[in-house]
Image 1: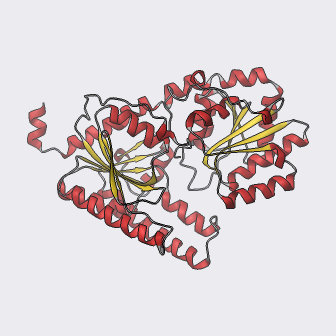
Image 2 (image 1 turned 90 degrees about the vertical axis):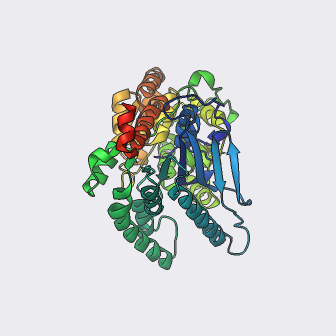
Image 3 (image 1 turned 180 degrees about the vertical axis):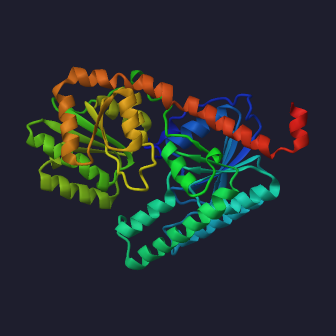
Amino acid sequence: MTSLILNAEAEAPAVAPAQGALAGIRMLFVAPDDYPAFRVDLVELFSNHLVARGLKIDWSLRPVQDGPARVDELGAERFHVARRQVSGKFGALRYRMAENWLRLKLAWRAARGDYDLIQIRDQPLWAITYALAGRFSGTPCLFWMSYPVLEGRLRDALLNLQSMSWPARIVRIAYAVIADFLFYRLALPLSDHVIVQSRRMRERVGFRGIPMEKMTPIPMGVTTERYNAGSVRSIEDPRLAGKKSMAYLCANVVSILTDLTVDALAELVAQGHDAVLVLIGSVSELERKDIDARTEKLGVSDRVIFTGRLPLPDALGWVKRADVCLSPFMMDAAQQVATPTKLVEYLAMGRPVVCTVHYDQNEVVHDSGAGFVTAYTGKAIAEGVARLFADPQKAEAMGARGPAWVKANRDYRHLADVVEQIYIDSLDKRRSPATRSDSK
């Protein structure tokens, strides 16, 4: 699952590009993510590690604020931004039209051979356009499947998780079904390589007819130099004084998952624990109303702290201060294949965790020994937390096992090695036989 850290781009250290196998390679990266980027896999893996190895990147992301069409140049990275004025009449529609026009122009440039690599992330139908452009120019085009987007959209529409009208739900269902067919029959077969988030995602995509050798799992990770309790100052807040605290870290606080943490808090308070819950991340007005209604109903509204979106050091300061960190995660078809980032972030900070049953979370907690896995209910989460509250020394000992495990298994320095090799292999396969012979 994509990163949960906030405003990370402001914290990324400036690194002088190094000369390596990717030196001089210019890549086009197209994704539906926000600009400025905040997701850790974009900021850390690409803007930090891979750029430091000499990779140059042209980005096409979605601006979070209104502004003119432009190209922002930041060292080895160029950000192509479409005009955005959503506050005006038909602003959202006009922005999408501008974005589509920009993407088509970038596809034309790719077809002319202006790039050495094309990387498409979580844009199932655009992958067809860019894969065809890559075939025309001889440029490797890779797809990065960080999330089963189409399955997620179908789930949201069927269950009405985003409060859509019936016509909107029908349109989304139709789109998900048609796009799913095109994605697996055209987009992925045309792609040179597919990066997936987990072994389970690789298996699932393989069942749809994509060769297993064409896919590589790259889980979500962290850069341990930055996610390091020794370099982060703990948050001291009077609302925490004398109380046991739980932290839930997420870029966007969503009530469907937060409900479980609130239920766990209410259960702990009912058992006599003087506990508070810290929700770290941005929360929409609609979600805040839902959460406030639930906390008031359960009688714990004075025990929930909303931090809002924070710079990375501050967000990690709250994590460091927490007695226990929580990672509830759904196990529906769309989420089964994820590798939840927040869990790895907690472990890197040396905190004991309580998470719910999930394939990746089960493996991480079992292998690291840094916490407990519980059922997907507030009561079960509370039972796990209560065990850690009751034995603080054991809890700290469990949390202390996390950093070493993360460094050995989920550090972006190591994950960057894998991605770099994928790119090098993709470039080599597209070279002419003569070029390959000359290089030997």
